[in-house]
Length: 163
Image (cartoon, rainbow, N blue to C red):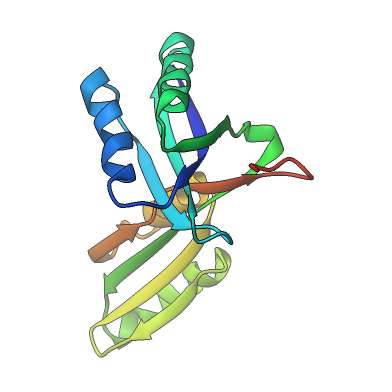
């Protein structure tokens, strides 16, 4: 089993996301991560979908997605030739006495403290999935009251791009 990151250029119309997600559910495939956003062309959106499976399943996913009429182009982003990132927001319950510990951990990971209240902090961190997982693991001694992850998004390195 391996994880694949697909970068998909789709028409920016209502229902496109539903059709793409429907393809996955009809075939029994799981979406590990999904991000969508408008491109510089307002008529197009970029979807980044992460899925796990064996080679045959991942190839089938790519072929089935490319058959959808709303899909303009699809490429798999190779791990060694692309930049993939994820964003996490973590709300940590802590009093003034433990706040410095959280700030110190955040500094090591170059995370930003984006909100401070009397009993909590919200930390923002962007990076590879493994970096985010390591950060969250180090926060085990603290009470995480809320956590939100965006899912992976990425671009191919160099001059390679979707049209």
